Image (cartoon, rainbow, N blue to C red; front, side, top):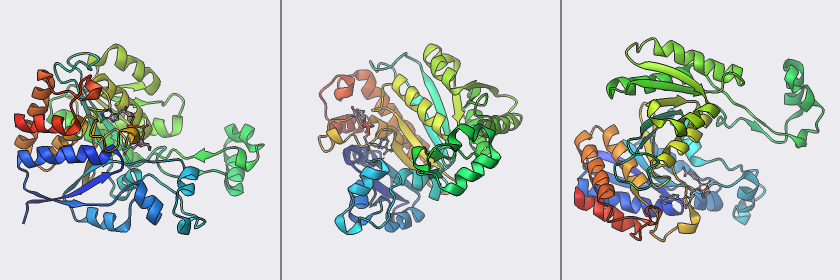
Length: 372
Ligand SMILES: NC(=O)c1ccc[n+]([C@@H]2O[C@H](COP(=O)([O-])OP(=O)(O)OC[C@H]3O[C@@H](n4cnc5c(N)ncnc54)[C@H](O)[C@@H]3O)[C@@H](O)[C@H]2O)c1
């Protein structure tokens, strides 16, 4: 029997292409694993009314880790309209399966390293090496949303919140409410994960990203929790910044930052910015990590216009594979894979379209496998 059971979730569009590429390097690196295919994505929503079917949840309950490609998501009304005729009018509501997976398995850490590999012509600046810790289960992604707004909620808000007064006059179908919910436990544990990482990797500073000057309740709690956790890590510096200023500072002085930690939405935004500084979506990798399970993925989506063309860059997914190897405790395989990626980038002979080359997805994977 293989040492590891890995759930294999290609999903939609280019998710299929990039996972095919990941398999080439995994086979070459010689991971002793069984890969079990799982259903996820748009087709399962259309055909079955569930983008994350029960059988996939059961698969995830029994694996060591999962590698995930990408899914197509669409707004609620479009999603409902695309359901198979037999499923129409059943009141099914589409929710992103990756967001559901994160919440269902309590994958509370979204870890996004953003490293400029030397010689990548797409680097914003050479030497950038940022690591983003994004809280992954709470905040504006809680899924507690109302459109139209129920009467009881409007009445309650009218009674409890003075700033609600201008909205109270509106018809209930003329506004919507999405709840930003942040817990003390959720805030503390993501900040602790960032500091633990900084300690283990000998990083110098953790920057807490928030908007506590305006979003006082939830971001105030996040910042307060962060300051309390930081006291347990006296050897690591801590500072904080408002998310809007952070985007500006990151572009201006990326070398002033090291490890960044943020609530869900801000983390999502700044990690895309950081990914762009090290080559763009073809390089952005991500780990959704909980106590028992971790799901690794590229940060990009399903890019439908490139689906099945084997044109996109698989490096993001291959770096996510490297993260998976690290998480499984296969540090030397992870390091070898990262070196191989760095070598191919440095040589610059094999380049996909985003790197201004003509190599295919699989040619890139094969070049990396050859370096191993
Ligand atoms: N985690 C996920 O699965 C995830 C993340 C983001 C978006 N999505 C979904 O994906 C679909 C398409 O969304 P989108 O077009 O906004 O974003 P996207 O990330 O799919 O693609 C945007 C553009 O980025 C470029 N790109 C993406 N990946 C690349 C790669 N590996 N190499 C080179 N270039 C790459 C392409 O030019 C592409 O058209 C939507 O349905 C969206 O909801 C899913």
